[in-house]
Image (cartoon, rainbow, N blue to C red; front, side):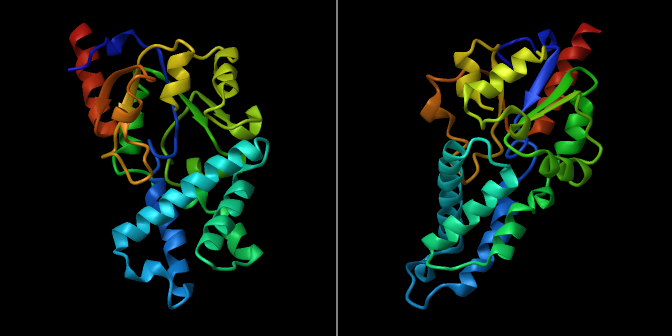
Length: 241
């Protein structure tokens, strides 16, 4: 049971990647082939596949965060090309411009979680759905036409339009200024109503450690999947009908 009234909300804003899109799977599919180019004495050869995946995803996340701060107005696809080059360099591997460009342009191929499209269609019956995402317009368009085909958003706000990347408060000010009622820490500090945490099993990127930031966020309910939330929403609205 939730700790707040799901029927009192009129709109939901979503961070797309990690909540709707399984970007860990998409990213690993592109990074793991680098292993074939490791030097014979590299320490990763002695690691398990899970440890290697953790290594790659942690470096990806760290470089992405660093570059978003250093280049807040850079298109996300270009920024990801830079992330790819940085991760490869950490492994002692030189990559070509075409390889890094291919990595940056593959965002639209990252798969959606199995429950995403159906759950969003169900949630759309009760709320306005808003995308607030750290991507560029072309990349998000590819995601909409691909893995999110069938999902309808009432508004879409991406970093390319805003000029900064989350968790910069500017992105949430942009949402407010555009009059439509990620991310949980800045949202809580700006006085937004309690948020919903879609845990997705925690994930490997360190994004599911709610306990570590519990004093900085305002979580009204936690669900394992978006489908679980859709079930709870339908039940809540069913009681009011």
